[in-house]
Image (cartoon, rainbow, N blue to C red; front, side, top):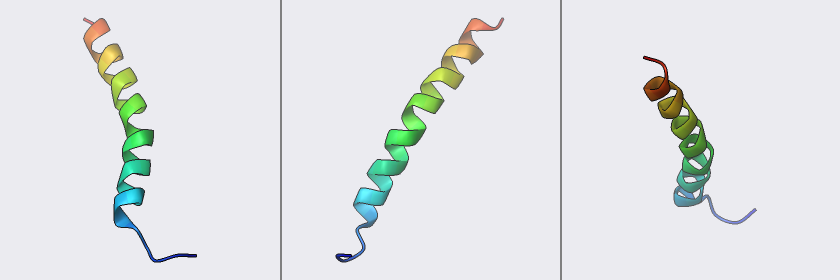
Length: 32
């Protein structure tokens, strides 16, 4: 593999977390 890229790791993490947080926030707002 090439050299370790923390920025790519962070982008991948954000790409995974963003939709999860969006759904969680939508449910949190929709509840009461």
